[in-house]
Length: 219
Image (cartoon, rainbow, N blue to C red; front, side):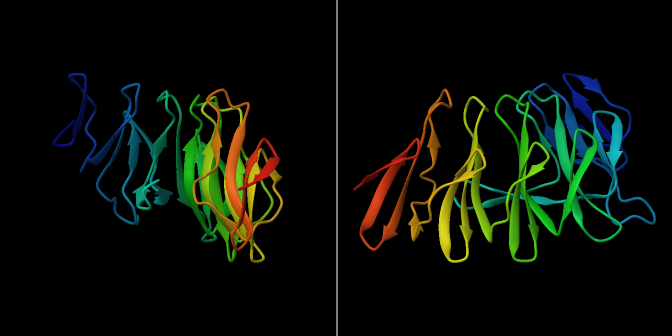
């Protein structure tokens, strides 16, 4: 919790963080907090524990399953040992910073996240009318829009819904499906062990199908 300019974790107070506010707590007890804006800067310092890690961070969006959007300034991995944020560059772009390492620049970034086992990371970068999924620093092919980027529960696989040139696809592990007229929103799921996946889509009006591990069945 916050006590004036101090962050108190398990009864132990931090060094002073002038103007500390908006505490974020990781699962391992580490904290992130934000201080008072310093002279000549547009944003306040961001601390992880007692270490100031950035003053040029930039908020990013994390869409929720219920259709709302959270605006965050930092995200921790599920085990609390890693953290990521986005920052503005001198050229006006935005880049993800993963464990202190800056990655590719885009006009904006969302869906910044770690996998359930905390070993992988992902986000979506946007440039003009194109969106790029980035998995572990590797950029996937461009789409016009991307939704519901997710990892399997065992973290071995990833998938998302994509739209390009008027048609929809599902991308699993970087491989695009055939093209559809419509996708059933949020239907992409993985089995708990990550070995299987499924989704529902339509190729035409009242012409829908379920795809399981790449094999389709009309419904």
